[in-house]
Image: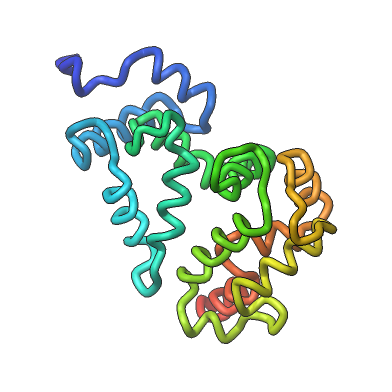
Length: 202
């Protein structure tokens, strides 16, 4: 094969990623080569991750959101993502499996990692999401969710929670499964914006 040990993906990691993600062995090896090009150390720092993320949102400020996404995937809390954590991140954020995505969303919103979500944590993530919405798109947001505070209140009301209540992972996932509106509100792209984008494409 001519592959040196350092540029080859270990069999264990390869097998684990094939089990836990939708990527094929071939795709994983290709990703690994480009990962090593970008990050010769084999790890992505929070700063590198932010810069990758920024490329997706050239006319907004995704820094705060990128930091939360990074935190939710830094499984061992060492301030970097290794290839495995990075691929799981890619898989989760593009996964079609609703349940996996919701489990990840819970981790994203559980800012302090204590296993429950409070209203302040929801506001923190929604505020980060709002920084990614540019001014033009902002104009299309409905009146009752055009600020981070309003949107947070709307989400909290949908869950039927009082201000100082907490959400468990089970409640979070069940609430979203039962009410698609919550899913729309906790995600980055507002529906109205999506409709506008569709209009532009036609």
